[in-house]
Length: 196
Image (spheres, rainbow, N blue to C red):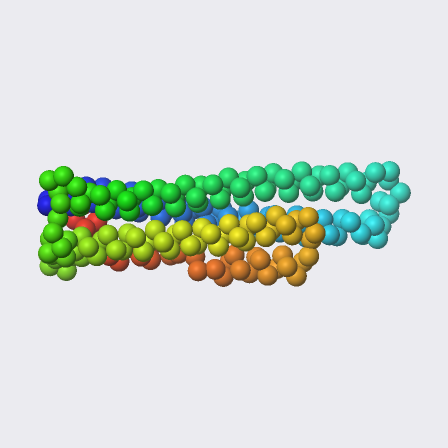
């Protein structure tokens, strides 16, 4: 049993690292989304020839400015795609940890009874609590990833037909969405992890 607890401590340390990375990615995503929104908003303004004032007489100015903004947008969208791949990588890592953790208590000489899984030592959670908590944590991150993916996909479609109203609504959704706080969901694993 002690050996299994040590293996779980290692797994939960990895979970904490993944959650720290998730938080960093969240900050990056919000920044990238804001940048993309700004460029998309400018494209709408650039398309109106009345906004060029005295520069209207310069040959090809509208096309040159639009081209620069489109290049900027393309760079930001590629960065957004990379950030979403990083989020997905964390989701896959958490899924693997849930699978591995379940297998750890149910194979070979380590098959634990229900009583052993629910056994508590003081105020620390049981292994069963930890497994359930890890599964909940994985599901929360998976759901949040799907929401983020939907918002980013919607941004890509809006980029083709800019609408400041739709852009504002998407931005608000991304900023207001239920972002998972760092310690959310870790309640069930803190007891085992703190023994590390």
